Image (cartoon, rainbow, N blue to C red):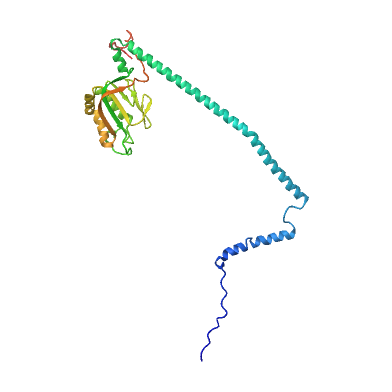
Length: 304
C-alpha cells in the first residue's frame, strides 16, 4: 500500500526583514524605561507633575528666575564696562615698553659711540707717545689694523661630539671630547705666538697682550665676546715658516692629536695677505719706576 506524501500546502511564514535587529527594535519601541514610565504616570495621576501650583511655590520660582536674570545682567554690564579699561591699560603698558626699549637703544648707541671715541683717543695716544717705536707699540698693543702675509688656521667641532676617550683631554675633565674648548684655543693662540706670529685675530676679534679666552657654558669668549664655530684664526707673519713652526711645536702636535683621536676638524694654510682689524677696546697702562726708599729692593725694573 503506497504512502501518501506529506501535505506541504501550509508553508511556514516568511521571516521579517528586520528580524536580525531585534535588539535595536526593542530599544526604539521602549525608549523610556518602564520604571520611569510608571513614575511619570503616578505623578500625572497625583497632579504633582508640571509647574508648581501653589502660590508659595510660584513665588519661589519667580524669585529664583529674577535672581538669575540679575546675576547675568550684572555680569554682562561689568564685562562691558571693564573691557575698555583693560584695553586702555594694555595700550598704556605697550606704550611704556616701547618707550623704555627706545630709551635703552639710545643709551646703548651712546655707549658704543663713547667706547669708539675712547678707543680712538687711546690709539692716538699710543702713536704719539710711543717715541721712535710708536708704530711698533701701536701694532703690538693692537691699536691699529694690520695686513700682510700670514697663515689661516680653521678649527671646528667634530661631526659627532658625543665621542669618549682619553688622550690629550684625559686630565682636563671635559665631558664632550669632540667639541672645541677654550683651553684648546688658548693652546692654539699661544703656539702661534711662540712660532713667530706678529698679530692674531679669531673670527675677526683682534687679540692683544691682555686678551682673555674663556668659556661660558659651551660658548668660547674672547674678551667677553662670544664666538661660534668654526673658529678662523688669522696670524700675520712669514706664512710658510709660521705654519711649519706651529705644526712642529707642542701646541701644534696637541691640535693634531685632537684631530686624530677625536675627529676635531682643523686645516692650516699660508696666505699671501691677511687683514686683521684693530682691537675694539684697549686698556692703556704705563710703567713707572719705583720711588726711592719705598722699602722694596731696587731692581731697576718698572711696574705696571
